[in-house]
Length: 71
Image 1 (cartoon, rainbow, N blue to C red):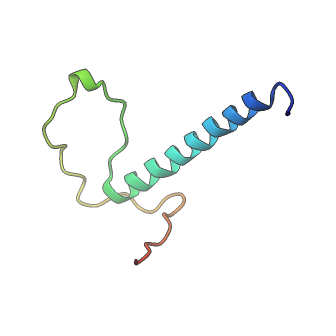
Image 2 (cartoon, rainbow, N blue to C red):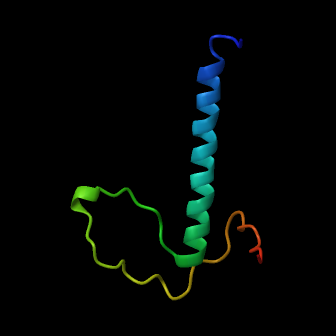
């Protein structure tokens, strides 16, 4: 068996990796559409379509997304 703190360390690493991945995904979304992810209270969510994105997304900043693959 592992040490007593191994489970806590593993969970912490999982949370940190998830947070990093969400940051990368939000950067990709902003570069493509000019919109950010937002915190939403689903009880008060508006079911209408979101406003259209900016006509010109911001200039490339940060890490680009991986290339698209053809199946």
